[in-house]
Length: 499
Image (cartoon, rainbow, N blue to C red):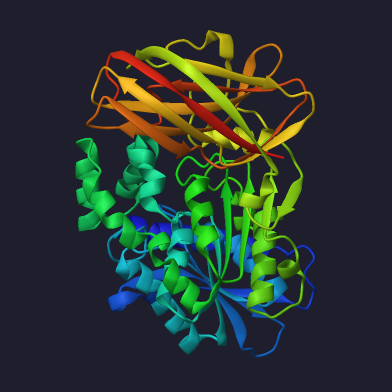
């Protein structure tokens, strides 16, 4: 209890300091007022957070933005962005700690019904206690808060707009890609929940099973915790949805977000760029200028405030290649590619159960280096052993790999369980490869199978004189592996979308 009170005090002090600073570009007559509140969540459970209201704009009513904090993050997370939104756009913003973490009450239910209903109860409180406009309500968040926002849009018709950043739309596809446990990401989330919160029954069971190498109960819960299973409700409710994800996201990789986006029939927008989980949104959350948060602001201005700022007249899919610095607009993710290369993969046999030099890098760190400094995960391709390696033709002109590269292959193994990890590299004339994208796939209960799967979505500019190389091995520290010592033979086809 004492530590909780101390955290509350320190958080309030830091937040007040942040809010006392001037907002760049804001008219001097506009500002923001902050208060720290205990808000009744679902069942009366207290949700504690900052309520940031605009000043100098009259009595309202004002648009309302609700921001549930990320997994293991306190309500301070969005205070900088909230102050900016209140002062510059005239929004009331409530940034609160999600259920079960820090000074909010309850237990962590992994985005369960109570956590989703907390958003509605915070809306109820705001409508009763602030000059919030019942017809202009949005939800924004990063990571855990992003997924909660999508679920709230399915659950509450009052939500008219969502900004969902580094989001999950499908928990199983994120943490159990192609029947392969994403052990570092899942393990990190579970450990953080134990350290910073109070796990409820579901999280305790998930954690216990994970320590036994199982993920059955997590998979059982995943559909009810995933917006991908509720897209019909979101479409029926009509909320305008903005999604921003990073190509190298180690926790919620982009394919599951892109697939969800494609199924939306409401006003929608998608931003994809290089970087890892939450790294592309970090600066904007503290109130600094940031492409993602600037777009989120324009999104809410358009779909809550009714400002004709033109965001709905520009291409809805905005993409920055992971190794470049310029945004490109497309009408859809599928239309970004204008041609497709098909690379035949001749049969190759390698030793399974032994890792190769190819790897996906260090979660969060490697993606952050790619996003901020354009430093890729690299490998000297001739040094890659214990793997299948195939080379494509050298490009005489620069090109862009954009979309979902796809691998179709026949696998024959000496064991009944095999994990494969496919890596696509941009290889320079000296043989050094920069990792473009990757994806695992686990085969269980059979020694042979024909598999067809997409690598993670990517946009990557390939210089003239470079070529693509595909590497397939049987292990990566990021994932669990079913591979045992033996031989694996694979052949098939690699399909690469580009423009």
